[in-house]
Length: 345
Image 1 (cartoon, rainbow, N blue to C red):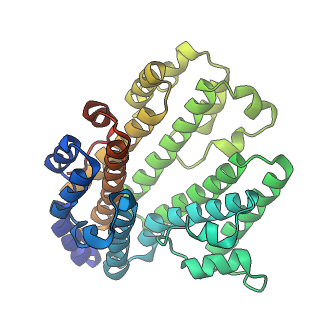
Image 2: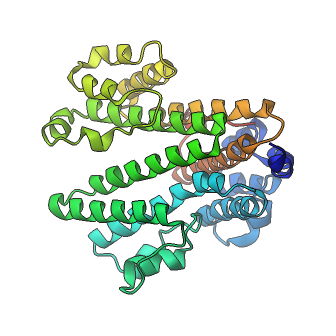
């Protein structure tokens, strides 16, 4: 797409500043968190490294780096649909944060500190919607706004009935991914459509395995909640997960045999058996998207490069955070290395 020529060239020029394995190994090999933090001077975060006084505040630098990327893409990306796909997930993070904060009796100031200024909705407008009686709109197109308002209303009502914050996540995730699938389809770009489909598949798979491994099948089936849990619009039909509620632990791998996700499920189950943690399943799922994003390198111009770049930037942020938290907590180098995600570059 010629309209994306400049945006593609711009993000390609920034890719060398993404983390590479040399950066990661240097951070992993650092003796302490402060030493690891200094290595960010050699990355795209260099402009913000001096912004904090204490190494423990490193998250502020990561957030600033992501915000830089958002501001750039807001300026250079010609298609607002792609920006919706990139940034609406942050709005939904904020919706969940507000609703859970209100449920936990947090005040406006406490909730504000947890919001991320990365969405399509300015934080001032988002706060006004929730905290000011006369403000009932978002600065989005009407179709988006109505779907979001309906989802928020349903999440609130369901929480009030159940007192279970999980439903805030489940209901709003359903609204988000349905919107993303619709938006991706409107772009008419096969890569973007496939990326969102994989994203949905992996979200379903993670939800399915959590239910099975934690023995929560009865709760979700008897309360007719499976339609809330499993998202449509992916490549795998939702009946696969619903039917799998009856499967025993030893047959879970067979459910996904022959699909693009067979390896993710097998490795995730093995890691859970060994560590009793879903951390590795999250890692393997993320790597499927990283591998798919990496395939965009062979496309000369289009939304593919932009989507891949921002996803890689988010992946970098997760890796930096994992290493810094590990260093601050004294987690050994080999354990950290085993946990970090695959890099885009």
